[in-house]
Image (cartoon, rainbow, N blue to C red; front, side, top):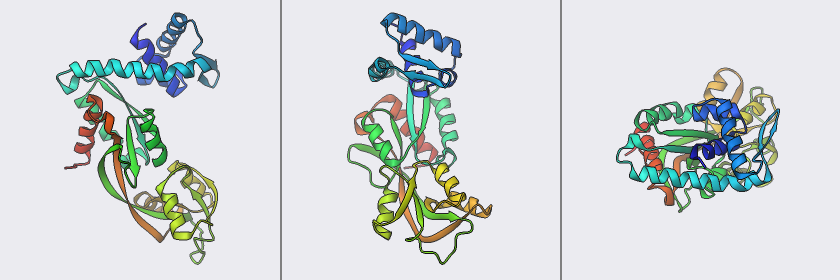
Length: 283
């Protein structure tokens, strides 16, 4: 069994698409397809159901995915332990984002990582704070940005204090009570939702929710409700007369970059932590 076959299997499983997987693996879709076919023939099972909408794991494929990821992680850890220089480290860092990539300097981060540790690739996944914490614990991701209190089993770097405001449709009447307004909440676990209930009570009219900032913004712009949003980004949309900012509930929250304490000594994680410190000028 070839490790690059396993790696193709894992990336296709995560992306659900041969073309996207090929881009992440710096190869071609036919090459990735041949890797999957070779692995299926060797294991004598079908790993994916191929449809016009992409690649979907079979039941047996689902069972093998986590084992395949652990096998790859173990192999990369062996190589990285033997590596004497940072530019010899190889592997993938699965990075979760709770804001837009531009707000988190992701382009600079990836460029710097590529220059200093060219063997490390990055997979980006948008998630809410609660999902990021759970995904780190289940080893589905390696690290990410979160708001609020940091659990004791995570290692953290404080990135910045983030100002949060309330955004409303542009024609929102200033005399309308936020307690009576329809709210688009963040869904799942998010400290913003907890704070909203603390300020306005548990009878808040939450008719829909999304942990994706862009989705909530579009819903607000469409006039469907109000929501919490990062102040610095909200100002740009207010200037374009797309939304209104309601400052009544403004608050500050801490933004952290976190990884599992049990993984903090991993060469790939250490390399990422070094880049985060450099990009954000942390001491």
